[in-house]
Amino acid sequence: MQIADIDFCSVKDLNELCAVESACFPAPWPRHVIVGDIENGDVVYIKAIIMCRIAGYSVIARSDEKESHLMNIAVLPEFRRAGIASQLLAAVGEIALYWGCGGMRLEVRVSNAAARNFYTKSGFKYDKTINAYYSDGEAAWTMLASLPFPKFPA
Image 1 (cartoon, rainbow, N blue to C red):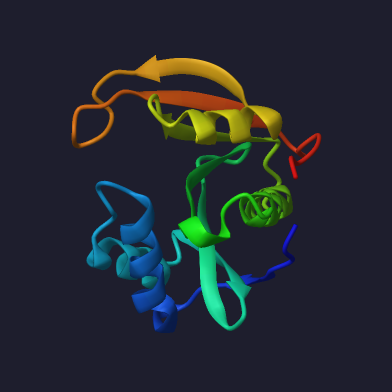
Image 2 (image 1 turned 90 degrees about the horizontal axis):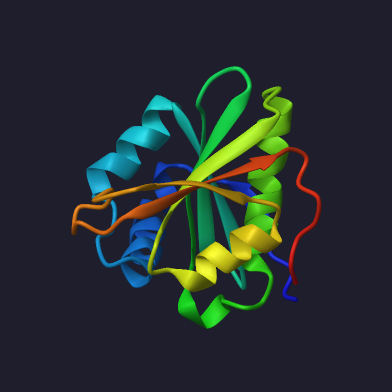
């Protein structure tokens, strides 16, 4: 496991966040969406820093008073399988608990078996399938977890 420094993101992190997003996803979030999120404060972006570089980030929003929404976890390929995603998930879990949320939900691509496995090991359970959820037409699984998380995979 590689220990990262976890911190809140700001607009000054935008270039690195966009680079991580582009390296991780076939349809990355547009730059203006990330800027709007960070500036409006509707969602919280957390970054994992290793050797003065953003190795990954996560995004969380409050769905309502009892549930949070994990919108994204992205880790650069060269930092995967080192515990970075687990550290980011722990950080957003703490934020959700601070908000008073008792649960967290997320959507994950049906084809992303590695992410589905990570979330399952972290305490998430399959809820339902949403057909054509992504812009390319791929379906998503909705997964739910109770907080605090029971454990984190290595």
